[in-house]
Length: 487
Image (cartoon, rainbow, N blue to C red; front, side, top):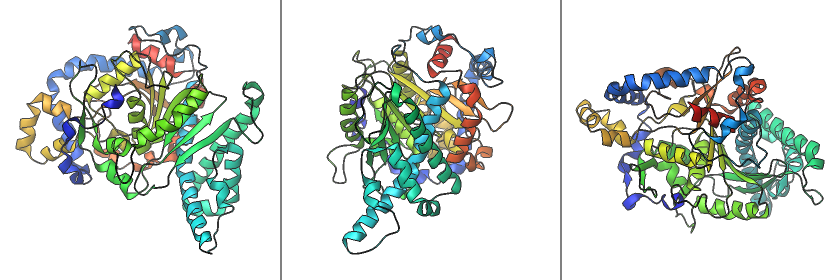
């Protein structure tokens, strides 16, 4: 059971003593990538034909909206014996599925700020102080339909504009308006009996009371699309950025017993699974305590996980943790299959064994993962390796020794998972699809990408995916899985 895997193996984090150094190693990441490339020269020719086939397949996906974009729906059954994703569920098209999750990920930032101010003003009011916000109690009230969310944003627009870039404010307003209008248009067709004031899309939970120390997440309920979404906030606080910098890997046990040691980013792992600071439960268990009762009350609904940047990495790890790979029992009790992760601008999360375990879960019909990455977004290309390897890159002699002990260095190299939707900054070719192969050449960090941090911003993701709308609306994620199986 993967949820039982997440305590560190033997209570030890590999290279944990080196975490503080990770934040200063950006200049050495490309060097490390080159060293790994040299070690893999022997296998490069073998990978080349496979990579060329992948690129050719991906290139056919990114041009004009023509017949080459269409994939036979039967392909989603899986040519390699993959268990098909629930055929009784009404899966959205690729644009709708991706865009909804991108907007949810970005709205989370602004709402977390608004709720923080509301808590502060509520506390000040109890001591006789005044405030700038309109009706803080309304802001903190849950569950919150999209109609009310739109009202609180409009009523406090002046304050929010001071907190955020104008682009972020516009994204938040547009996303809430889109969610609400969709609810209004589809209410009569939902089949749901709604009590007065209850919308089809509601914010059910928002965990941000200790946002300076812990991860922030929200839970949304979409009664029309029949899904429960867990959205994780990206990096905002110093603790968030420290978590990003903890690039040492923590070893996990593999319940199927068929793979090498599974290892994941220790910072992401600890943020989601560590118990402490006065808490008796991990954030992961806390989230399950919220979503499982909702899913049991709505047995035809599916679970989604999403987030931007750090939030995307946490969403990936959360989705993976719900799976009992190799056990024959499917997902954790109370969670219907498959779980869908749509990560946005996510860094890498685990090593090659993590990638293989993730693929196994996809093949069992338990996980779907769309990884959205802007071209030249440096965060999506990092980290290349654990702090152990990064420190070794500072010493040519040590790195030379490590590169010839393949098991050591392979275990410490990060790999992406899922199906990548790469959003291009090009008016003629706006997007590209690729599949995670485990090749060292995929998502390799370069110095050129380090100078392109603007490609990581939320408004850049929102605008690029909208430009690709026409093409993506005629595809589905399940069809892309069928294409992956056939290659």
